[in-house]
Structure formats: structure tokens, C-alpha cells
Amino acid sequence: MATITPTIAPAPAEQTKSWRDDIKITRQGVFATFFIVFGAILVWNAIQFIAPDTVTRLTFGANLPELLVPTQAATLVIGIVWLVGGLFALLAPPAMERAKRIATLISGILIIPAVIIIAAAGASTNVTVLLQVSMRLATPIVMGALAGIWCERSGVTNIAIEGMMLTGAAFGFVAFTLLLGTMPNAQAQLIGVVVATLAGGIMAVLHAWLSITFKTNQIVSGTVINILAVGITSFIRREVLLSSEAGREPLQQFAIPGLSQLPVVGEVFFNGRPIFYMMFVLLFVTHIVLFYTRWGLRTRAVGENPKAADTLGINVIRNRWINVMIGGLIAGLAGAWFSLETNGSFEDNMTSGRGFIALAAMIFGNWTPFGAFGGGLLFGFSDALGQRFQLLGVPIPSQFLQMVPFIITIVVLAGLVGKAVAPKADGVPYEKEGK
Image 1 (cartoon, rainbow, N blue to C red):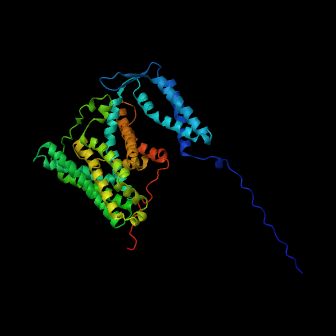
Image 2 (cartoon, helix red, strand yellow):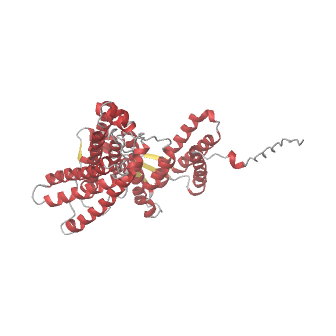
Image 3 (cartoon, rainbow, N blue to C red):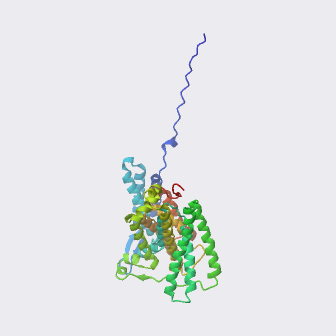
């Protein structure tokens, strides 16, 4: 009788552990390495290329004293802080995670004074003017981010902010140009701003119609609107503006009595133009409405769980339509900043991608108004810094300086944002049950 001998399968060979398995690339590790490398470069350059007697003069206004900063000493201190902070963030045990984040944050904040002090070495720079320009350049970005918040908090992705802003800039300036001969300048400007706002709203209606009513892909809908805006505004400029006197006077700057006299703060915040002031009004209104009113609660519910909101009697479709239109009106007003408040003219593609940077500011701010305001200030400051480099004669090609805001956008989205969580139903079309 034959016997069957069971066979035992050989044990799988143990996998050899590679050194690559012990290396984990994390966001914090990347930034820590960045500060270590650039801290070492900063220390080396301070010793080798900056004379000990070099001074950077920081001015803050006519009635305030100058701040004299020893350039070499300040550069050495910042470089050493970067080195120590980077090494701590890279090598400290996981139990000190909070301290590591604080070290990385401090190192990141020191980038601003480091750049200003080194760029203005041996010369002077007005910090108040730099802040004022930063706030001014942040205006369309912050307003664009607020437009995105209104849309995306209700569950509608809106990458068409760029097209809405461009349309508002074009039609607002066309209305101003055509009406200028029939009424005073201030009235024509006011009507131009209103037309710009409504033009952004009309583009928002198109976006809502495609993405909410017909449930098309919201990214595709936004892309179509951006392309449409480029074509329409170029046609309008060629057919209307080039055949008339296109250069006009922008909206007038006015100071708020009393507040504008405050040192530094008054010059930065209370000595601007109308749309600049509207940015702050919309910022507070958006925050209050979204977080302290019934409409805001319903909007956030629709953006997180539209099915549950519908069950509670909230009209999801109507809520999304209204919020998208509000976002479009804000984006149109941001477009008026380009043509009516800043340049007094309209050029093709004059928004220059600021609508997309506004989306990055919105994500940076985690879909909150004041967080988006902080992101807008970051991008505005980077833009102002590029302009200041040109004035100081920093030997960097202007093309690279124009890239600074977009490089900052990439860095922020890739590293600084962390775990930004969008509304759960953002970008998801909703169809009422039973239909």
C-alpha cells in the first residue's frame, strides 16, 4: 500500500531590509533640510562677502526714527537660528513634535526680515511703503479667495475665478469709457464698478447653470469659462477700447480722517482706494455670515452633507445657486481693481493668474475668510518684494522676480498648507432623490 508523505513548503526567504526603508521623507523634514542648507549658506556669505561695518537702514515714515541694522550681525544670527532650528526639527524625537513645528515656524517667519535686510544692505528701504504695497497687491487675491469660499463652502468647485475677474475688469472699464463723455468722472467710475461686479455675476450664472443644473464636471465648467473670458475680453478690447481713448484716471485714493494719521498702521490700512476698503468689508461680512447666521450654517451643511441638509428641508440647489452668484459678484468686483482702481486701462490677460493664486490662498486658509486673508497677504508681500528688489537694484533678472508669487504658490501648496481639508461635498453634483 502506497504511503503519501506530506511535503512541507519551504519557508519564504527573509526579505533583506534596504537602507531606503529607514528613510521617510516628510514635509517637516524637507523644510528642516532647507533651513539647514540655507542657514549654512547664509552664515558663509555673511562672513565672506558682507563687510562688518555694512548697515541696513529701515525707515517707517517721516515722523518715525530709522532702525539701523548691522547687516553682517543680523545675517549671522538668522543663519545660526536656521541651522539650529533645522537640526532640531530634523533630529529631535517624535515626542517633541510640537516644539519642532514651532522651530520650523520661527525659521519660516525669519525669511522675511532676512530677505529685506540682505537686499537693502548698505542702503535704506521703507518698511511702511513695502507693507502698504503688499496690502494693495493682496486686494484682488483676498477678494478672489473670498469668492471661492462662498462657492466651495456650498459644495461647488470654482476655478473660474480668473475668468470672472478678467470679465469684470474688461466690461467695467468699457462701461466707464463709454459713459465718461456723458457724465462726471466719479459717476462713470461708480457705474463701471457696478458693471464689473455684475459681469462677474453673469459668468457665475453660467458656471452655476453648467455645474449645478446640468451637473457637468465643475473643473471643466470653470476651465471653459476661463477660456471664454480670454476670448471675449480680447475681442472687446480690440473692437471698443483700441478705437477710443483707452487710458483713464483710476479711482481716487482717500484717507479715513483720524485713523490715517496713526503711525505705520494708518498709512497701511486707512489710506487707500474704495475697492481696497471693500476688501475688509467683504472679509468681515463673509466671516459673520458663514459662521454666525442661519444662512451660513445652511451653506456649510450643504457643502458637507447635501443629502442630510435636503432631509432637513434645506433647498440644496437654490443654496448653491445663490452662493455661486455671490462669489461671482465678488470676483467681478476684484476684477474692477485691476482696470478701474489701479491701472486706469485694460490690457489682455491683465489679471495675470491672480485668480488661481486666490484659489491657493483659499486652500492655505483652509476655506476660512481670515485664513484666506493671511494667504493673500503672503502672496501680496511676495509680489511687493519682487518690485522692491527691482528698485534696490538686486542683480536678479526681472523675469525671475515676476515668477516669485507663483513659486510661493507652489511652495505653499506643496509644503506649508499641511492637511487642508475641503468641504466633503465640494465638487460633487447633487441630485434630489426621487428625480
